[in-house]
Image (cartoon, rainbow, N blue to C red):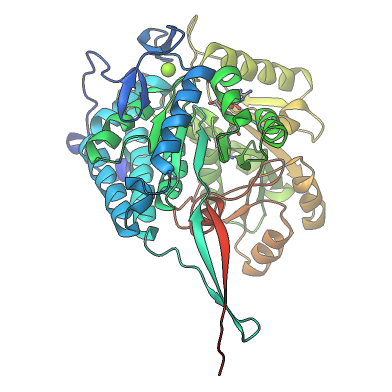
Length: 511
Ligand code: NAP
Ligand code: MG
């Protein structure tokens, strides 16, 4: 899943043009309904909503709109699938692993189609979807497939007249609320650990990007997961999403999205049934570039960090602190590098930069770019958009950014690189940590001592040293402070999808 690489991706860059995968022609999208109990349902309200192609503004298709009543129906199905004695509950753990592997096989089989749907629905370049999102999704399924029969409890030494063991059991019905920036990958980050631990799931994809999740519904059925184990409900946040958070039949919600909605979800969870909540939220991620770094490496990694996925990443390299001595050269090389980005049709293999997700998000990014200009940051590159009525924003670089400016404080979630100047290590650590967010940070230096001491001081869940977006399914991911609660990926995620039960036997005889 290592997302490092780019705007395009290292594998794509090494592959001869004639061997690159090609998008498939999608005449008609097959899966557009609500997926409950391994069956396709129309919405109880009868409502549908359009999903759009952000590159053209065209409607790709109409999708059934789930609301609270549909969520009730899905939760009832998930509950039956989870009850004592059900096929899922009795299933040998290694067989759950086999099902996850089978799902991974089917995703591999349909990889071209799924990458095409992801590109059409999100506007991300097809090759990025194929090489990064699909690869990461398949690896996530296979990694957790391997864990299914290795989730061990312990035997705990206590008073000799007792025998005490712990068992790791599924939590129950897990809700997953997914954002639009990595719709397939975020879905896999949630369902793979949830299913490997033996839970059932109800999923709400983002309203802008429901199509790949719905395709996965068809593969869940084909893989022969028992009915009700996975249920997928396209719909809107304030209706279907809010119904997840307040539902007394849902035992846990895993959410990826904005900090503001994360707060609403935790509040509803507390007020309903105190369901478990894990949150992966926003970021305003500091990168510290010391004068002793490999400058070209730092420029290239940060550039990818800032502009990858049109800047629509919670991990975006959004506050780049560069030490005085190399400041001008860093800015100059960043501009040179940004000029190589190719904006265009996401399905074209040459394209490395697509449109933003929708008009509302486009307007928010442009407003922040305007605020940067007004507040006195120096616009070095970009700052505009292409064509009338298009959602394509140019990669944008600001220098001389001050800590109090809006572009320095607010999450932009767009292709905007903000470059700050710093003098000393102590000063930059304080400034880097001066944020409500704490998702990721990066340090560029050739001094191992400095790298280790600065990484120790960073208030973030991940620190990348001389690299960026180096995400791996084996390593935990999540935020400090208002960037989230809990961890996804790696062995750590298993704890987020299990309850620990203590079983104590009283022995009638002891030696
Ligand atoms: P968002 O508006 O918070 O939406 C995320 C999901 O929550 C969508 O499915 C949305 O549904 C749903 N939602 C909206 N209002 C809701 C409510 N009241 N109750 C329940 N669910 C609700 O975020 P976004 O704009 O899609 O994504 C951008 C944000 O996600 C950024 O802040 C980014 O940093 C964060 N993010 C974090 C990570 C991470 O791993 N930490 C990863 C990716 C993105 P609808 O879309 O259908 O309204
Ligand atoms: Mg769409």
